[in-house]
Image 1 (cartoon, rainbow, N blue to C red):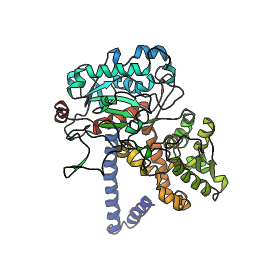
Image 2 (tube, rainbow, N blue to C red; image 1 turned 90 degrees about the horizontal axis):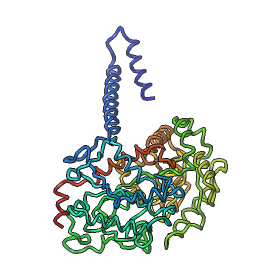
Image 3 (cartoon, rainbow, N blue to C red; image 1 turned 120 degrees about the vertical axis):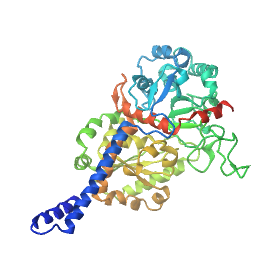
Image 4 (cartoon, one colour; image 1 turned 90 degrees about the vertical axis):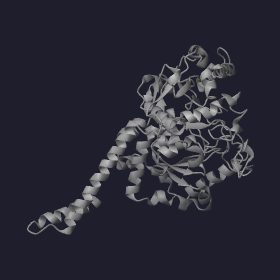
Length: 484
């Protein structure tokens, strides 16, 4: 309509060619000139985004990484003998398979952010190539030495490395995947249960980011708990074990900097990717392919929630089921039980909005299942943006492709909380759909058992861009660790 109005103004000026151009004619030209400037600036910004050339002042556009080559740092010979599936070390767990891919991408020389170097003296980063997820996979538990034995050998090698000791690991990088390294996870997570202090100064790539770190892990830190007016603050103390506290998120991470890795798409949902990518790029086609307005597949009471969380989650779930009873049954897909993977994937691929209710913690696979299926997430939880989104919170505008509903609003009157999805202006829905399609390859990747798949290079590049922007230290900052 806006452009149509401009065209009408211009046409009106042309019809009156026997008289001087009207002020509306010059106004229209001015508007079009402004639009041209905006379009040119936007195109330039998009080019910069495509080239991933963003770098902070004083930092190199390309950082250099040295990859430890010795067998003790990767145990690849044993892992490949025990795990002939290669890059997908755990075929039963679709979350854990990204470590070797990152290594391959580093060595390909195609990254605009990080390039490999054979000279450790010129390296900005040192990459630990041991794939913890793969080593701890079920397929490797009864093969060769134990996972803990391998892990201890890697830690021994790091402690003996002069490059690690130089800055106490502050320029070291390790992909750990998994879900958390909070202090609450000590003794729970089997893949890194020992000698975790080796990570305190390192940068860790993993799936979840609490955005809270322990004292003594960053430059200019007094290496004691947070101080206020010179006194240790009980208010800002990092809680050592979040399983018993009232807030449902858990605090504390035992290293200085974390970068989230994109999630691997559920293999059952990946089957729908070609259809979504090729036939649903227009809003009207997307709507026609999705007869359900809302989707929710509940887990019932059988999920092993951590202590104190079951009741709160079930209140949110039951509020949805009561709301669903008020909605036209042909417009919702609502199941209060687990579904077979293919049935679950098909239901999301036929839905426009997917209800995402929190579990124990802010990072939920259901959110990424919705993105993978091309379904706009309706996020019902507190804290996801602060504790679960990680680097993506800065790089992507989550409001452009996600509807967020506070738990307090949901529990008071859930139907009104869903009203925006029902009454959204057409142009806003069109924008959300376009944003969802644009962001999917940046937050998701997929690999088959041969290491081939979609979006893997895009995902890797975003990781390394976040790595340089969030975690790369200058020489003076590194020297802080050398003198510690």
